[in-house]
Image 1 (cartoon, helix red, strand yellow):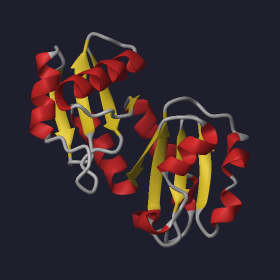
Image 2 (image 1 turned 180 degrees about the horizontal axis):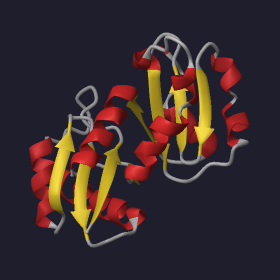
Image 3 (image 1 turned 135 degrees about the vertical axis):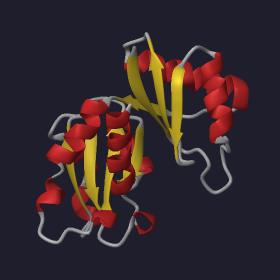
Length: 181
């Protein structure tokens, strides 16, 4: 059995793409996923399956959500190594007196080249900062995620990828949940 973490983008936000986590859990169990566990309403779902390929798992979940709930939901599927890399490689954690409430991670559907940071033109969003690490973008918002244009839609448009962003508290909680499984 392989445990996958599916990060659903854009559900239960401002009354759009509403999916109750209990209904999602039941739906995924009905198509054969085991030990389905959700975390908060923003769409973080752990599933166990014989399927090792994360992309196939994401596609299965995406298809079933569309079939049952009628929502087209982009999904990024990650494993524990992705979350461990967040803790190990986040350059902003090295800063003295860092406010972790301003830290976010954008999980990307594909690995990025280190020069992809140039495509993001992050300098136009100063004082917000970003750093690319494989299929993750570490973000430090100066004011907050709700007050910037450097968001998931911008990242997706500039890099032609699927992206979903989680705050630092959620990232650390998801890693803890992985470790407890």
